[in-house]
Length: 282
Ligand SMILES: [Mg+2]
Image: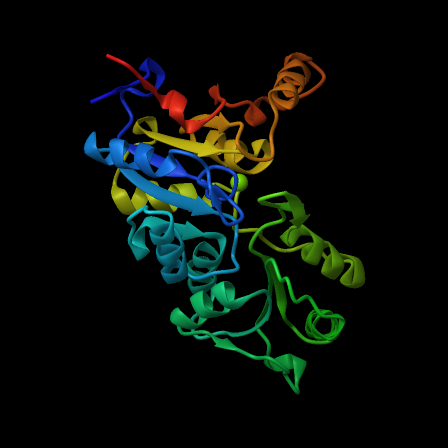
C-alpha cells in the first residue's frame, strides 16, 4: 500500500470539489477512482463539496457510480443542499421562486419548502434563490425581479462561480444568473451559501465531528475552494486538473506577498499537478 505524502499524513477527512478535480464534464480525471479507493483503504473519510447546484445528491451518487466511484447520498454537500438546509434555519416551509435546475428545486422541496413556478401574487414569495440554470429564461428573470422589488422576497444565491468547467473548456456559471438579477434589481444577494463561504466545510466538520486540523480540501479554483478552505482553517490543496494553472498560482503568490494586497487566503497550502501526487512510494 502506498503512503500519503508528509504534508497530508495526519489527515482524517478529505473533502473533494467535483468539477475539475474528480471529473471534467463527462470525463473522469485519470486514476481518480483508484486514488479515492486508496484513501478509503487508509481509513480517510472522503466527502464531496461542489458549488454545482444543478443535480441532486442522489443524482451525484449515480454520476460517480458511472465513473466506478462508490458513494452515498450523505457524502455530498452541494451548494443546493447547503442552501436548502441554511434556508430552513431562516424559515421553515417557505414559498420560494427558483432560478435554477432540478438539483436546487428538489433539495429545497426535500426540506419541506414549496417551489412557486408562476406566483400570481409576489407577496406570497418568501425567497428568490438563484443557482446555475442552463435553461435561463427572460420571463423567470422578470418574475424574480418583481418578487424582490414589488414583493417582500429575500434574494439568496447558491454560488457565483463565473464559469463551469466542461470537458473542452468552459460554459457560463451561476454567477451570470446572479449578476442578471443584481443588475435589474440593484440588489445583491443577502447571502451566497456555496464556496468561498465556509458554510459547507463547517457543516461537514460538524456532521463528521472531525477537527479542522485533520481536514483537507482538494479544489481547482482559488477564489472558491481554496478561499473557503482557508477561511474554515483546514489544509488546502490546489489541483491543476481544472480551471487554475501553475502560472496563475505563482502570480497570485507574488501579489499576496505584496504588502499592498491582502490575498493570502487565496493561496493554497500545497499545489499538485494531479491527485496522483498525494501518494509516495514507501
Ligand atoms: Mg471545481
